Length: 180
Image (cartoon, rainbow, N blue to C red; front, side, top):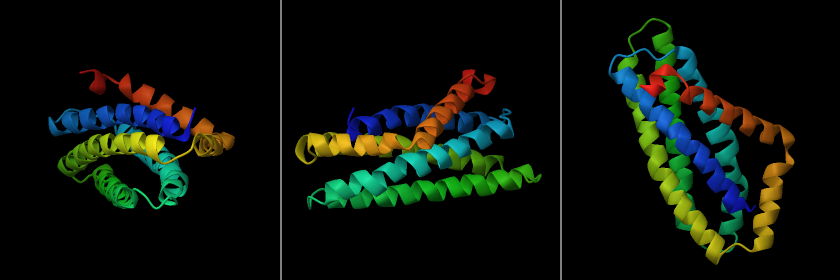
């Protein structure tokens, strides 16, 4: 496997999360009950998997390697801005979820920001997948791809965390509110 393939594999799991996020937003907007614990799981997956693991792989390793060839820098800059946009949306979800948990009626902003996050993921992942195709075909050597992949896999705790996050997505996909 290569670094680009690993990032695409991450995207497959994030696509699953995207569907969960959008369904959760839809159910909340319709007035249906989605347990706080499930919404909190979504937020943990966003924080621990999407941001702390996946985006960090891109920002700390993949993007700098591609940029070192003095190419695709505008695309990378755009992705960095989009990552920060996603973090801002996640902060808004967390803020309104906390207020909702304290008894305030925050269903509408939680649903709205969840929907916004799902739409963001859809758009962002499509652009990044195209970027990976281009970087893989035109910029990165096979050796660089393998070296970055090995770096991603070398930290056992992160590999275990990814597995745990995938299990959490599995759990959310089996919930009644998601099945409706």
